[in-house]
Length: 391
Image (cartoon, rainbow, N blue to C red; front, top):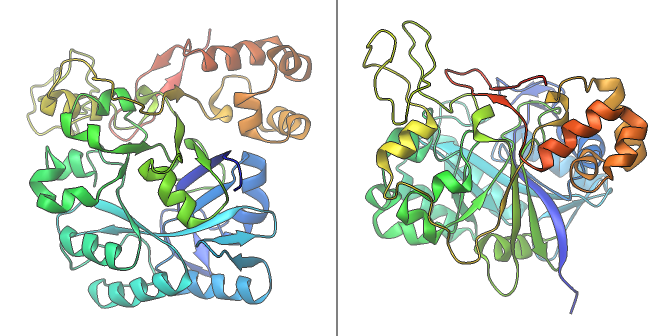
């Protein structure tokens, strides 16, 4: 039996263009399968990439052509392996009638093609990603289960399309008995496992920290470290469920304060809340019609005033995309990647002394502070990301 290995995964990446046509309207056109698998994955240091637009017929056609050309190969346990060794997991992000986003990860081309056929008559344009579908979330859970998939609430706490953020205060209220089908949920950029741990029902789920990338640059701005025996969908499913020794070893994500929906925002006077959460009305003008921030929403619906740690839950490590660190421009980042092999290698394993030798003392200090959660941050809100304060 193969030994367990630690693999890095980003399981929420969009495709901007396939077959020369738009897929995710808000995504960069150079965010293609080819660029993702042959260029960006190795630079970032990823072993597994989940593409969440695979129900699009254009994306499926491109995958078929890559299979025919030998650029991808089907894996016995599910998933598709690229020539560079990256496991491609086929997923579909769907907005249900409830107005929330969910991801279905499926094991192979056959199951995704079936899902694509199921979804096509229920959306306005099957070729475009994350269309609002004419189906209830319960139907999505059912078809995901029938096709051998993994059902996952996407960016669960965000005010725009997150299940907790815009739909329900408890998934069990919306899903009923089908909540038992949820093994894992995605935290989103403005939340972490400590915040999620303030809600009792989340103790039954494992957590994912994914990038929700709309550009190549943002791939792996959040990622996961998984214990798996091989690169396959079957092993991924075991890891996400925490079964048979496979597991999520760690979540690596942005400090929630950097997320663009972290605090409550007033659209009238553009004030970002700074008071004790939950802030339910504008602190400046009194407007009650605010966009509630993730922190404020979690505190508003929480069962506990402080997070409750659950058994063997994976630790959550705060990370900052390297291009967000003050003073670390593209040329300097290219030098670091060329020397150490990938961005994840720079963030997680590279020696601080060696980083200083290549990029200078200030950059080395910044990366060291990031690893130890010592960066000064100006919180985000209202659709604007937080910022790293210069020392």
